[in-house]
Length: 385
Image 1: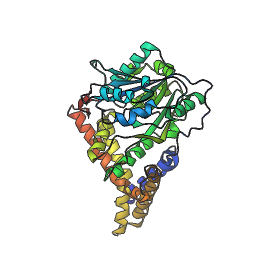
Image 2 (image 1 turned 120 degrees about the horizontal axis):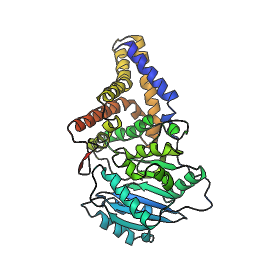
Image 3 (image 1 turned 90 degrees about the vertical axis):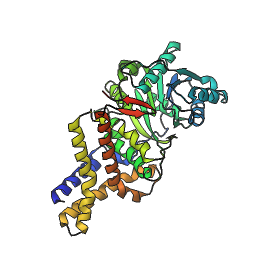
Image 4 (image 1 turned 60 degrees about the vertical axis):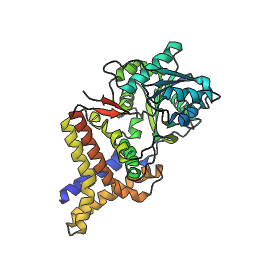
């Protein structure tokens, strides 16, 4: 291990920590202090659901029970489910005092060129528009458990700050075993790739959204080409964020109380979540793949290797640079670990997470090369050209 490599890694971490939009602070939150609108606008929540019968009894009542003073309709789209998803949704609605808010529809045959989730969302949007188009669309996943005032806080934020899109990255399942590291690392890496302060800065080109919870103005979505403009997008949330930010203001933050109840029981659960879209993020480019893997090695492998070489008699400069870079990356990981109520000492294992995510990224490329694309809930080929 050379002093040059460890110095380069340290320089990279100094840039990331001090010049990359303070991505690591995990401080961009929806605090609920936005001014309430004089009139609460109409909202339609669209919930794509594929084989979600086990989770809907937990999550759907929270949607039905939203404490929202305006009109709220919920369109749950049964996306070719085989487990009784539609029946579970209707049963939850019958048992809830606000059950009349819910309409359940089923997708028709998916046209060529459409990703399954986007076709489900388009089905829901088209169904709602046939009755009465709302001011806002609330696109949320069936596995997300919302707080009672989630919608009110989102709308107040959007209306008071004249935003076209408001999105929350909901808390994921904390995971056990290796996932106790890999789940917070996923959130950390997402923030590194899309620093929330830069996403929220109108002067920055960085744009993103988090697909589990997106509130978007109906007219802004229409100007962006509607859901059909996203029909082939595997990473649909970030594509939506880019499309809307090109013409208006957006906001993305971390959720404090909204959470996904989908369990991550094994490493395979996280692995498949990443591998289904990582190579799409790299635009299916072997050159970008090679650069990404080299960058991950520099950021996450070189620092601990340099520090360990120092301990075994390596050069002083190599060790000092390596140890400094390792400690700097670990310190930057602590706020995200705190969000997930994990020990700060786990931050020292971030290089191991980097190795896992490098392997997931390479596996994503292999799936594409084998013409498999992504596999998600039994549906193959998403993201394959």
